[in-house]
Image (cartoon, rainbow, N blue to C red):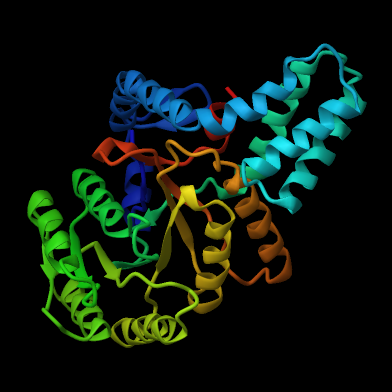
Length: 356
């Protein structure tokens, strides 16, 4: 159910499309292998539903405060005032709250609805559309290897998320090499080694070594060994610690020396419990590293799930201001510590879970 997109080479894609045993299902041209995938996907539907139930449960504290706004009998200024307060309490942020309120009011005016429950449905649609640009698949296979650099503050769940991502990539058939470049934190190297052993993947590690040197060695080894993915775990940083942020920039520069096109993804792991502070982290790390994706963890047990709306609006404004920059999607979200608690982000699923 957890998914990433493994890009085929042009030659392989052309060969697949030229097979005579292709068949049409609906309007999509598929091969027998694709049909098997469709069947497998249908068998995974109960697992996906279990994930959605867990997501809804994790976001209940946020959702209940917002849903309570729509229990009245009429649509009036009091409803909008209460909705504004609820969105702000959910850490949606001032800008995103104003954006969503304006969108909802436009929808209400255009439809002339009178039932507050209908306003809730319109809020779900407005939130889904705001979050939709964050919904993108992580692509591997365009480069050999795909080098993914992962950053985040201590305690956000960075190394654990790397372990979960490694598991899913390896299960999906990708060959993975880990780089234990978090050499400053006690036991970080050992923690990543456990994930490497558990997933039966190789790891480049050096006790007390220079983080940039470890990253360089890993990328070089990944190329030599024909690995498809190199995951670089970097030390946890606070964006206010400028000397440590400079170290992150150094790692990125050194990785580029090993492979001029790398890193191909720069991911930031953020703790959903931190609300607007998570947005501040995204801005700071993006300024330093030019982020290409996010992993949002620990969304369960918090009343601050609305921060994704704030991140979505920031990403929209960032792209409008600098179109040459790559978007910053949310590749994965997490609602717990178990392996299956990290999942692919889908905008509508999240909006529905938040407001269920």
